[in-house]
Image 1 (tube, helix red, strand yellow):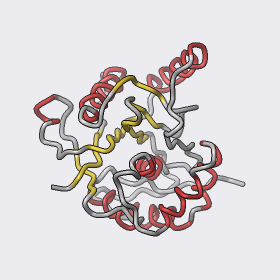
Image 2 (cartoon, one colour):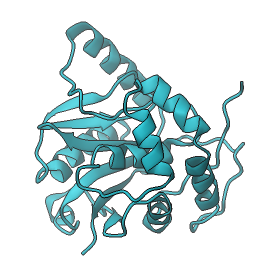
Image 3 (tube, one colour):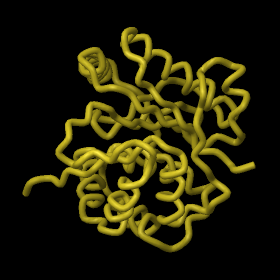
Image 4 (cartoon, helix red, strand yellow):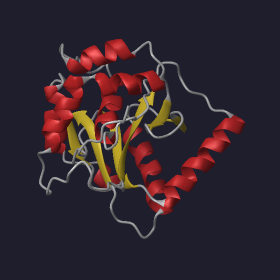
Length: 230
């Protein structure tokens, strides 16, 4: 069966917030732009921060680093908490939805989800492995339809699903004392070392800077955070 290709979600907080609220996330939790990765800019981001999402161009440098990182982890191993919710991305251009699901799924102790498509999906996905979760998302019509509806919104001209997309969304979360990178195109979650709920934003910003440094000629990076609305 051919996997469906979606129109990508725009990295626009207004669109992303509508998507989350449509799926049962209370409006007290909001996506906001992170205007810069230096301490002064980070100080403007409302707290607490539950997740940080990075939108970046998929380049040769990303693919090379991804392969090298995977090989290193396979040879050396890494610690990954059993409490992490991680899923594979099977649907083309659904990385924005996967990033948002990762953000919420790893913060359900703080986000009081109302009954709806996302809560149902997470309840059903919890006992599954990452690949099966990705397959389940393909069948979750409520989530896919919300994505389709909100992909039509935003400020830029809406592309068609067939237009080539070379940007990708990933999520950073704190869980059990560690900073995890959740990328549905990678083989597994990446443990980036210790963090705390209070330093998640700063520690994720450090990793985001590494992505930017690997592509010095590229400027198309966007960072947003899921925070408590002031």
